[in-house]
Length: 60
Image (cartoon, rainbow, N blue to C red; front, side, top):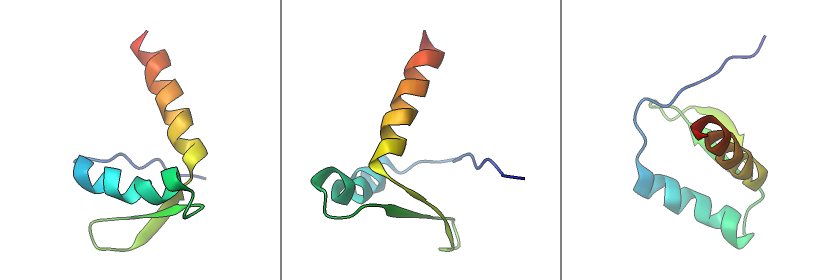
């Protein structure tokens, strides 16, 4: 069974900084940590595109 994690508060400055290695091609993935600093997953550039498509579809 998989779990869905929902961010309660997003620090957009940190998010933009963290995604820069993906945009530039310097890293294939960026780790996602919880409030305690534990690795809970990772994001790849394709995930960002999928998220944008889903948000667009939900908004319409």
